[in-house]
Length: 207
Ligand code: PRP
Image 1 (cartoon, rainbow, N blue to C red):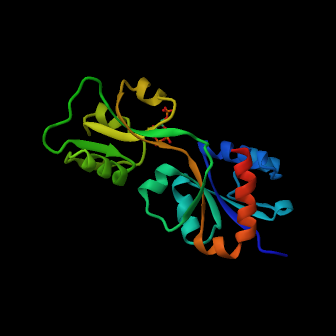
Image 2 (cartoon, rainbow, N blue to C red; image 1 turned 90 degrees about the horizontal axis):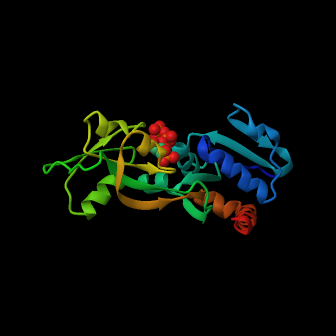
């Protein structure tokens, strides 16, 4: 039997859209995908092995070659320089990175503080604007930072805008639009080129 194609899938909000897209592309994924706590799901009919991982870890698995392919957010790819090929914009989980903060406030003149899960993206953005800032790395609930006085601004993902609104924050600038991408391990890309190209072709038809 040929070795299965291993695909790292992001758990959480991207997962459902990614599964829908694969099904639309003609792949038979079992009902297990809709309600399971399993972290590895083998789909023998398609000769696939799925690894269900944290969205921020997908590119790590693919870079290290334990997954041939993965579905990763452009936000993670921008933040982490991973040695992977980005082969397809899946155009799912659309959102954007933005600068936000309390309404009608100015940033501190001296080294304003920016809280974010994306220190590299944030540092690059403000550097390009000619602003010297201090980056404060957080792992979640970023919107808390301006409210409790930890930061002047945040750099975070905006999807529906609800989190900002319900916490009394406003957007100041858009940084870049974000969607999920199909990424491939460079060695797998050579060795399993036929199966990967087939997948890229079937997905391209339904995007
Ligand atoms: C993300 C992001 C925002 C929120 C935006 O957080 O960091 O907080 O979603 O979505 P919205 O515009 O639709 O409200 P996530 O839910 O991934 O959790 P986190 O706070 O742990 O980052």
